[in-house]
Length: 81
Image 1 (spheres, rainbow, N blue to C red):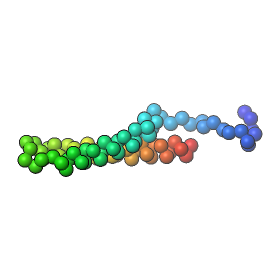
Image 2 (image 1 turned 180 degrees about the vertical axis):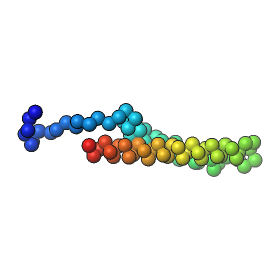
Image 3 (image 1 turned 60 degrees about the horizontal axis):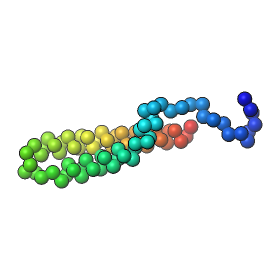
Image 4 (image 1 turned 180 degrees about the horizontal axis):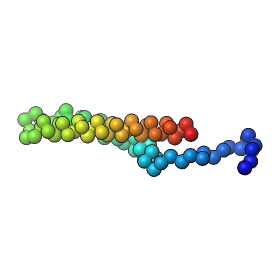
């Protein structure tokens, strides 16, 4: 290899496919989480099954937000390498 300090060195570690996809879709997951929270609080209280639907929306929003945060973390980890 060339030991010239002016030559840029290529990264030797390639992130996993999961980290690459999480980092690509991190903002989308955050937007989906925000939409699901908005939907959960705009369900009519008199609608049939509103309690279950609201619970499922909030659980799904939590999962989407967790995936979004994991994607941001993966992106910052890739930027450090």
